[in-house]
Length: 115
Length: 326
View 1: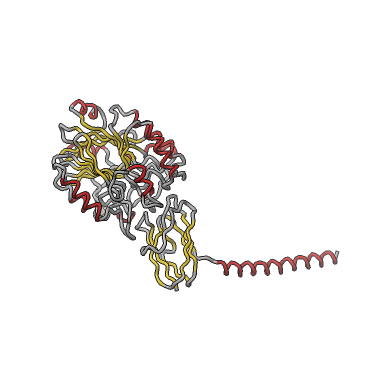
View 2: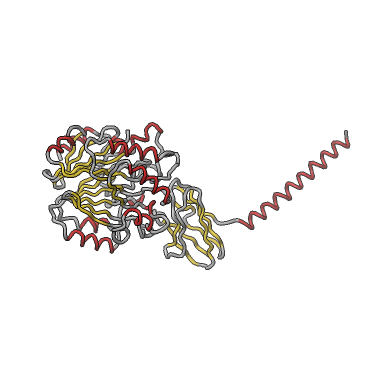
C-alpha cells in the first residue's frame, strides 16, 4: 500500500514537473514566433496605431462580413480583396511611419510605426 | 409639395427631420421598411416633388403619353453568404420576377453597382445569367466590390467597353439623357467616393451638347450627395458634378451603396437611392457601423427591393416607385 502510494506520488510529481517544463518551453516558443496582428473589425483597424521593431511582419485579419483592401497611402503595399477571415501580411524592414487605409472604404485608416 | 406633406404625415414615424443640425436633410427620407408592401409614386416636375400612394397613377400616367420606363436595381452582392442573407441568388431572382411582373414592361434596366461581392468572374456570370431572364438591356456602373483586384479592368471588359476613363459613359433614350458615373476608383485615404478631375472634365463637356430642357438621369454607385460622411456615404467631388447640372430643368440622381431607399429634393435635382437585392444596412448612424444588417428571415424580403422609374414627356416628369420584394 505504502509502496503504491509512494509510486503514485512520484508519478504525480514527475507529471507536475514535466507540465511546468513543457509549459515554459511553449511560452518561450510563442515569444519567439509572436507576430504583430491587426484585426479588421466593424470597419476599423485595431489597433489603429501599431508600433513594431524593424523587420517585423505584420498580419491583418478581416473579421468583417464584407471584404477590405489593405493599401498604404504611398503605394508601397496593397492587398487583394480580403474576404472574411482572410489574412494579408507585409514585412516592414525600414524604420519609419507607414500610413495605410482600406482602398474601398477609405474612411478606415491606420498606421504602422516601425522602430 | 402639398401632396408630399400629406404623404409624409400619413407615414409619420418614418420621416425624420434634421433635429440634430448635422447637415443631413432627412426631409423626405423614408426608411426602406416604410415601403414594405406598399410602394409610393413620386412625380418630380421641374424639381418640385409631389407624391401619392402607389395606385392607379402609374397606369393613368401612361395614358397621358408615357415615353420611357426603366427599372433600377442595385447591390446584388453575388457571392455574399453571411447570416444577413445566405441566399443572394434567390433574392436576385425574386427581384427579376418582380421586374417581369411589372404591369408596364420597362424599356431597360440600370444596375447601380456592387453586382458582385468579390469581383470574381463566376459571380459576374451568375448575375448575368439571372438578369438574362428579363430579356432587357442592362446598363451598369461599378461598385467598389466590382473593382477589387484589377482597377475595374474586368468590369469594363464585360459591361462598358465603349466607356471613357474608368468606365463612365452617357446615352440618350426617348428624349432623356443618361449619364453613368464611376465614383469607386482611386479613393483617397480618409475620404469619400471620388469622381476625379478627368471624369468631371468629361461630364462638363458631355453636358455642353445637351439642351437645358432635356431631362437628365445621373446614375452612380455611391450617393453623389453627402448622406453620412462618418460611414463614407457621400462623394468627395459630387458637388462639383452637380454644379454642372444647375441649369437643367429636371435632374434625377440615382445611387445605391447604402442598401436602403432615401430621397431628397434640392432645387431642380431629385436624389434617390435604391434598396439592395441582397441585404439591408442600418439607417445612417444607427448601430455600430455600415455593415450588413441581420433582420429576421421572414422580414428580409421586405427590406430588399427594386425601383421602377417612369418618364412622362408631356408632364416633363420622372416618377420613382420603390417596391420591396415582398
